[in-house]
Length: 307
Ligand code: ZN
Ligand code: CA
Image 1 (cartoon, rainbow, N blue to C red):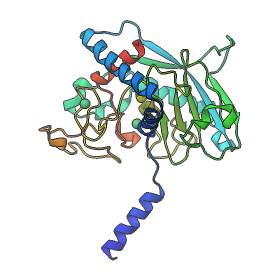
Image 2: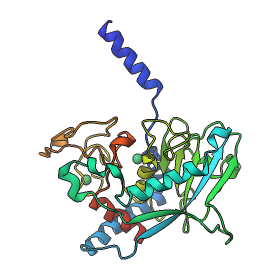
Image 3: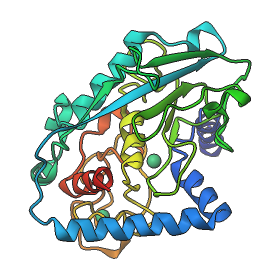
Image 4: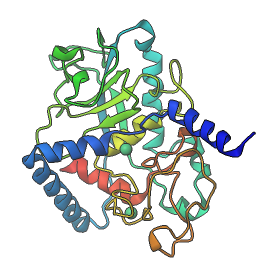
C-alpha cells in the first residue's frame, strides 16, 4: 500500500481514539486566568513548600497518613453505575502505589530503584458521613447528563446533574462519571477555597475490574490525579521547565505508550544519559508501564498534607 495513505490511516485511527490523559494543567491555568486570588494563593503554597522542605531536610514520617475517601458515582446508564467491588479495586491500587507495594516496582530501571519510594500515605473508604452516621463512603446519583466536561465542574453539584461534595477538610472527594474525551482531572492545593476540591475520573478508567478500558485499566489515572491533588506537577511542566522536584529528570514533553529504557537521553540539552523517567506516575504512559513515585515527590506530597 502507498506509504502516505498508510500513515494517513494510522493518524486517523489514532485520532478517533484520542482521549486527553489529564485535564489538571488546563483547569489550573483557567482558574489562574479567572481568579487573581487563586494564582497568588497557589504561588504562596509553592513558596511555603520550598521552605518546608528546606526546614525538614531529614524528615521522616512518624505516623502513616490515612486519607478517607468518598466516591460519588454519577451515572446515566446502569453500566456507568460501577460496582462497589470496582471501587474497592481502585482503593487497593492506591494503597499499593503510594506504599510501593505494587508488584511492578521490579520494572523500575536499576538506576532509579534507590529513589523509588514508599510514600507512607494510605487511603480508606470513609466510614462516617458528614452527619456522623455510618457510611460505605460511596454515594450514587442518577443523572440525565450524557457526559461531563471540566468547565465549571458540573459533576460536582446536584444543580448541574452531579453530586455535591462532602467537606474537603475531612474527605478526599472523588467523582466517577462519564467524561468528555478525558480520563481524569484534579484540583491542586492552593489555600484558596476551591469549592470543587477533589478528583474526577472517567468510569472506564477507575479501578482494575468491571467497566475499565485498556491501556488505562490498572487504576493509574487515579494515582496520577491524586499526585496532582497532593501538589505534584507533570515531569515536563511547561516543556523542559521544572516540576520543582530535584530527583526527577527534566523532560521535554509527555510520553505515551510504553517506551523502552533509556528514552530521550540528553533531552532539554542535559547530559542525562538515562533520559525521561517515563515510568513515573506523573507521566502519560500506559498504566502497565508506570511504577514509581520518587523521594522528592514524596517530600512534596507530605509537605502539602502538613500545610
Ligand atoms: Zn496530570
Ligand atoms: Ca525535576
